[in-house]
Image 1 (cartoon, rainbow, N blue to C red):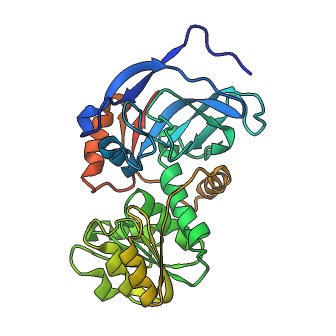
Image 2 (tube, one colour):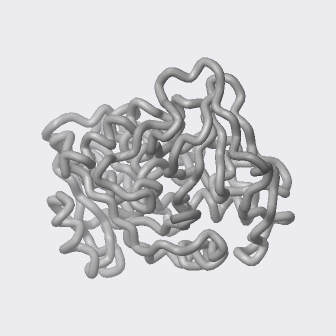
Length: 326
């Protein structure tokens, strides 16, 4: 195992002592972690910002972290600083990206993180750390819903709600890569950009009810949920017999599952998980120019509260990222 830099026993991290609005986030000095066997210590250069971060800050998210104090964030891009015993896939100096520990605490809004080496992969060579940090949670969600949950195949019709968002813009590209006919919902101002990413059809959800415009869909990836305008329930009308609804943010209530069964449809919830091999595949697609990464803005780590305020407005194209170091 390599030794830690002399005298460096603490680090900067964004912490919170209570649940609440963005203002509960504050910069703190905390102990620097050390890797256990099979783990690596990553010197974080950038951390991605995701909706689960806001939900966790405000209400505890999935309830896995318990009560504060804790540090939110799961997306990281950085450099391996130290390796624990038993690590053979990565070495000190490797540039890596990942979504470690999800849904347990990863504490990504910090200068260092530790996690099992296989929660990471070598970052895409074409991306800087800020763009690489925008990838893991969003792109893995898109990949795992389309590939592992829906088993999308060429020629299928896939509807993606919130197509212009962090997960959505990856889902559009990956569904197209899989050979699907891609339909997205987004405001009209984002249609040209989504067409450039591969969307075949787009519906302005602010102007029409999408279920009046879309039919015969094989798979719906709902990134909005029933909590907002009954999006999952309304999506059942777009599916053909035997079609699948995957409700990502709010899951599937028993009533929705019953309705789907009565209509001859399927409905399931989804939760992303760490996946080093999928991150390696995604890096290959990015380096081949087949998947693009949209970063709306990069803010310094100390502006985490501002990033959360902007993200919660729900108008972001792609991702917001926190820059931890140069």
